[in-house]
Image: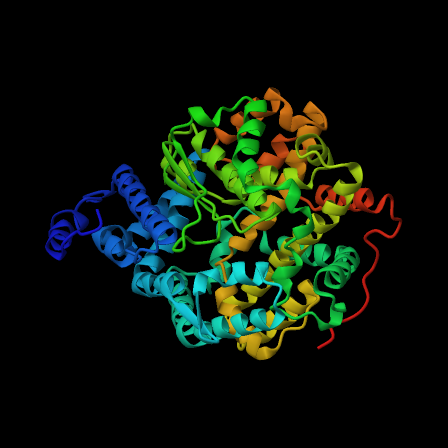
Length: 542
């Protein structure tokens, strides 16, 4: 699969790529779907091999094998016409998912060599920090675990130097290719393309982000100040970007999160919901700690629903548990998909699967779960939830700011690192210099995956409220909840997040349920503190 020769690729293109999809009347959509799924399988397997074993990325090779699928603009325009002509809403949505996918992969074909180089740098680069070699991809783990502030500072600078000199030029080229591709198909830029393709309106989502940033600032500032004093022994105004990962380590709670309990707990929880992980051969869980393994947890859908693989590299503490449960939320979703259509199994809006992942991850932000399953006392749970709420708010506020930044970046704003710095400081209440902003602004870009996370936060809060209402505060120990989730998982991504929210009994996505849950957790952790969600004041001090 890995060592296909150039001659074979040429013969394939000559005999198949130019004629496979095209007939006198148009293109064969079923053949396109079959080839697209085969391509997805190979690309996902390449990512898995790179992240798991540090192998060189094979994206350019794979794109070459499937070049006929992603180099013909007539195919994309054909699917666009089919979308406009399709009268049945479900089939039209299916075609819309395929159309969006083809445009993104049309750009991906042009970016294939860049993506290989970017992935290889991240997987194979080593930083020389004071004579000690550290893998580029291990820096986040070091920043998270190290109590040596100077070491954290030196690591951050070393990674920043590599990012600016080696990654940023490649990432900027990639950005330009995306813009050119979108213009070729009639969109002003990548931001407009994404806005029109997704079910969420970007202006409305931006308003929700602004609201969440505003409404959560006081709580977040208080929790951040408390953690800076407790963990770093620093006043908040002296905390810097390289200090922040350390704030979320939560070592004092490690006794509740031993490594040898992590997988058995996962098995117990799913068993309580009527799901036996030992009887799911379609899910492969890898929790081994290998040097070449990517520390960022991930779920790889090699073939949905028959081959799902989960990688988690333990770093220590509650974060390992949260990461495992998050990725297994994805895995269970995809392992239970029953819709036959390629687009609804593999494509669609990822906010749906992220909501299921957040649902399981956020068990560790549920006081009933902490007390009944981890044996925490009410007082320990309160203390732990302050730390957990800080981490969750940090992520929520970051993705609010990232979405706002990505709209500016992909719309072609000049010198976007200024916007990145301003939004970073607003969201994280930590100063960021312009050189530091230049280190991070392109690496932070996720091509609007931020939208999926934001939709998932909103939908997950509604889903959790529904499960509590249907099955009680211990819903996670009820087989009925498992059956309820299986019905939703079976749909794949057929229904976007807004429709799933309506199926749960809500008018659609909104921030109200999420805000109420944040308030509830804060009240529990504070024993009823009255100063919730009030108007924020103050600025970041540099």
